[in-house]
Amino acid sequence: MTLLFLFLFPFYLFFKFILILFSFVFTKHQLDTRQDEEEEEEEEDIQKWSERCSICFDAKLDLCLDYCRDQFCLSCFQKYVSEVVKSSWGLCVTKIRCPVCRLHIPQSEWTRYVPKSIIDLYDKFNKPYRSYSRCCPQCETEVTPCLFEPALYYPSRSRLIASSLRELFTQHPLVQVFERSEWKNSNLLEIHHQLMVEIPSKEKAKQISKQIMLLDIRPDTWRKIQFDHISFFPVFDCPTCHLQFCLQCGYEAHPPRTCEEYMKHLVDLKKENHEVLTWALKHSQRCPSCCIMINRDEGCNKVDCAFCGFVFCWECKSAWSDRCGFFDCVNSKKPRPMDSVHNQSVDRAELGVPDISLIESRLSQQ
Image (cartoon, rainbow, N blue to C red; front, side, top):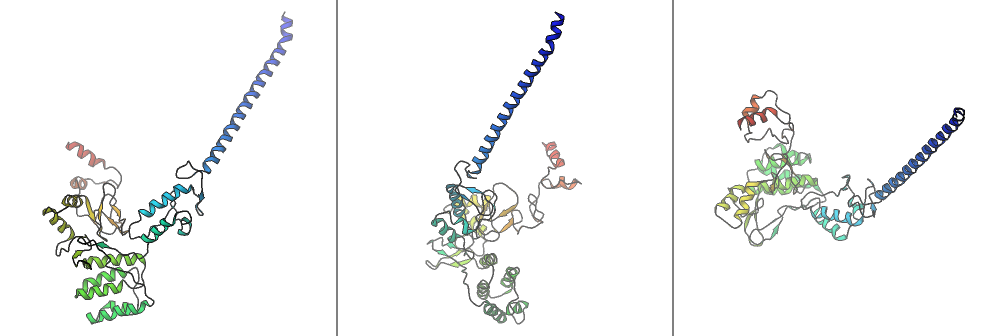
């Protein structure tokens, strides 16, 4: 028996080894098959999503942008461009950007995929020298105080401004600037503002201001000078009903009151829509450039005016600069909460980082 066991045991081990080897090979084959199936499914998924719209991820692609190669179905792309165009009501030219990577899409490209009505609407509201307009509060006639009129020979207009200045000043450094056409787009707004302050005659200043706006200047410079002109000459006579009204707030002319003072006066008189005025005065601020009322619920101090494109600080109402903090403006005259605690702290917390000492002091006061 012992001899038989010794004789058969090697065969048993051999067959056991064969079974284990077969099981291993079979299992490996199953794993390889499953892995191949998963890779095929993954490739199918990749192929499926590579042919889908990047907005809805459902419909198959109809177009692929030339530069960034992002792809969309025609319906989603048309809806996207339509919404962007309909919201471009400001005076700045709106650029159509890719909804995925935000790269600029040339007009010659996106116009191939949208209806002509959308293209016409875009051309209407995105002119480079678009004028600011207001409606008369009485007859609702739309008026445009500043119109851009291109000319063939701009140096003659610059010399015309110089001759107008010579009639007012015997010597003025800006006379030669306009005689020699040495002004630049970068400093023309500052020159315009300086002249409007220094010219004693209001009518003459208004005439020179309109002459400056007829120079060969960039659209963004023209837009800024347009609002600077309106800030000095806000009263306009309606050509239809001859009512004098304010171009900045849209109500009847109210010198010497500011727009806010006149709106408070209307609230005190309980005029029509006084509740709306009360809410606007409480929750809104005027853009320092175009004077449109802006409401801000939350967020930092940096505000981009959607109408004129002016970037300013919500706290100090000046043009945005390095001194204007996103949450704590150095130029602001408003009292800061817990200033005494901040002054006692030697190591003030960095902007955006919680101030532990301030939090502890507030908790201790509760």
